[in-house]
Amino acid sequence: MRNPAPCALLLLLVALALTQYCAGSHWLQTFNIMILEYGIWEPRFIQVGYVDSIQFQGFDSKGGTARMQPRAAWMGQEPPEYWEKETEEALLLSERDRQLLRIMKHHSDQRLNGGGADYHTLQEVFGCNVANDGRFLRGHYRLAYYGYDYIILNENLSSWTAEGKAVKNLLNSWEAEAERWRTYLQEDCMERLLRCLDLGKETLLRSEAPQTLVTHRVRPEGNVTLRCWALGFYPADITLIWQRDGNNHTQDMELPDTRPAGDGTFQKWAAVVVPSGEELRYTCHVHHEGLPEPLTLKWEPPAPRIPIMEILIGLVLGTLVVGTVVIFLVWKK
Ligand SMILES: *[C@@H]1O[C@H](CO)[C@@H](O)[C@H](O)[C@H]1NC(C)=O
Ligand SMILES: *[C@@H]1O[C@H](CO)[C@@H](O)[C@H](O)[C@H]1NC(C)=O
Ligand SMILES: *[C@@H]1O[C@H](CO)[C@@H](O)[C@H](O)[C@H]1NC(C)=O
Image (cartoon, rainbow, N blue to C red):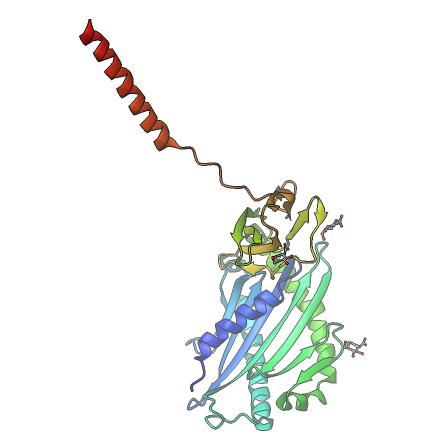
């Protein structure tokens, strides 16, 4: 069996990582992907930069020019020197990742076209989150080889967690790396993020209130799932809470991660299972900065059907009967 094409894999990795690190008001995230395909000598290096869920710049070594390119309109305000510097940094990183890939390939059991693999991948994801008051909230760094082996910077940004033979080998020499990444995440990454938020403020600092609704679904065993939806909101921070008779009903609440809608906005839902007939005791509460005040929603039972056909038929029959009586009376006279 062949592996999925590198490009499909790349998209999947990006999508997974985005939802994983979305928490926090605003964040900056960089993805580096090095792909070494069987039969192709030069590995391909791709870098994409996201602020919140919006791509703002990108680099692809396969492109003829191999330069860092703006991917968001507001990045056009950056001077040529910025793009020179970013291109230089991307090239340095790609050189470093190429060496890492070669080292890992050497130590790993995966063999090109031997273990059924048609390509090797090295993936790096790192970024920082800023708190509402503009301070550094947290940072993350993760390097994955071939999807299985990985090394993660611990949350305190001072030590590593590693899994897999190829990566554990790195650990010995990576003590100083943690320090380097901590400085990068707390300083350079934050500086870049704040600059992006300033340049793209009309896009990134806007707030779009969620559109909300409650759906109702009868389950096979007879209970009812009430699902409270929030769609098309920005930024990602939102609170959805179900209450029963005015008390928080969080313990049985299903609440998946907030997910990007793909158009720069976000989606989320919260669901509870309730006994049929008790739906109206439950309310959903939505807090979001785009709302002037928190919303309270309830399931709205469908309005009782108005029997228009019956009324029409009744009217027609009534008219016929009255008409017949009148005609009869006139005829009799
Ligand atoms: C950082 O966190 C890791 C794992 O949680 C822990 O093993 C390590 O001792 C911590 N280091 C410091 C300096 O707190
Ligand atoms: C209900 O949950 C919300 C959000 O977690 C919390 O802010 C609030 O204080 C809770 N209310 C009660 C009565 O526990
Ligand atoms: C759902 O139905 C089952 C079986 O009828 C019942 O035991 C359970 O308590 C119900 N759950 C809720 C939340 O009403």
